[in-house]
Length: 277
Image: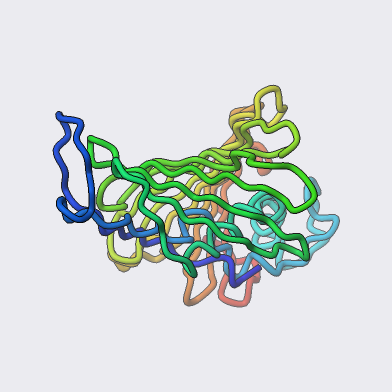
């Protein structure tokens, strides 16, 4: 899965157009071109060294059975849960969206473009139709409909809106193609060069996890001791778990009031061993 996770830097190249008057946005006389596809990193969190952690049986344990590595393993175990869930729910959205970069868009008129193509996902053939529309306020609206060969047809799998320069936006992702329901909302924002924020929120109505989220922040601009951060929020008990780490050195710290019983940080060094903060 590592090849699925990259830093987010979303860049769009779309032309300015009048926001108050509806008119024919023909590319031949208005200079309009297809919007640049958003970065694939708008759908992914780079979990880094936490991604391959072997945390079997650790989640929920409050003892020190991991010896001198407990702080890092506790942080990793909570991220692995989200990493596994996102890898499952985002497999089709990520793969179908990634294939769009290999195809040209067709102009439909009125500022609407469509990318249509087939994509092989784990041996199944899907037909994808990605529509990008230039909105009057200079935002870009996106809709992805997917059909499975021999299965469901023309299912709206995800939608999204980004601002004109691609600095921020959101996706709404659906699940259960035979009876689609909203599953996730993804909010993302660039805050500097190779820096930004992305949050995945559980949006499934009726779910016991509704409102839970994981947020990832990268800061490469301010020479911080910890340039990576993860927040894991549980809505049911209003608990925020915080993880901060240095990407290059791999040292970090974790704070979880509910689990540890206080607001103190627990730290680990570049060898993932427990140390005093």
